[in-house]
Image 1 (tube, helix red, strand yellow):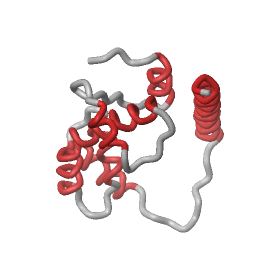
Image 2 (cartoon, rainbow, N blue to C red; image 1 turned 30 degrees about the horizontal axis):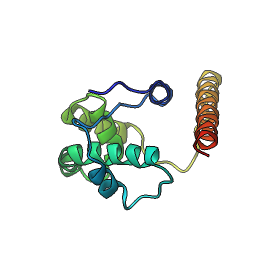
Image 3 (spheres, rainbow, N blue to C red; image 1 turned 180 degrees about the vertical axis):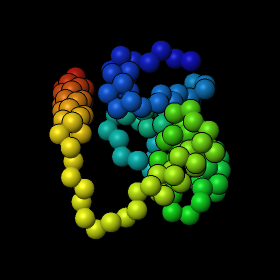
Image 4 (cartoon, helix red, strand yellow; image 1 turned 60 degrees about the vertical axis):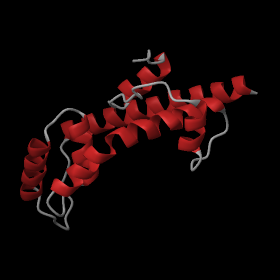
Length: 146
């Protein structure tokens, strides 16, 4: 509904996140109410918190339905993340159940092959770069707000 700021879009892409936005404008009184249990230091942070709380509240019932539908022992957060990304609840349950069956818990660590290790190092490098960029942006915001 509202244009996504470039920096938010960068962060969303860096973490392969799903963008959630409130359906309507949030009144200032509601923003204050939504953010009151969280720590924030300026109106921008308050508005971001309020938007996140608004989107969460809009989807809370769906999250609870997913949790109720999951068999015991499955990771509810992982299931919710996959559903938010567009997979059906049944497909997620099936894939997580199969993963549980395929990956028995063992005490010995498996050796990681060279290619897997290379991919993990590359992913780690990208995440570290994203974190560095976000910290720089945070520092810039702090500097501009003073």
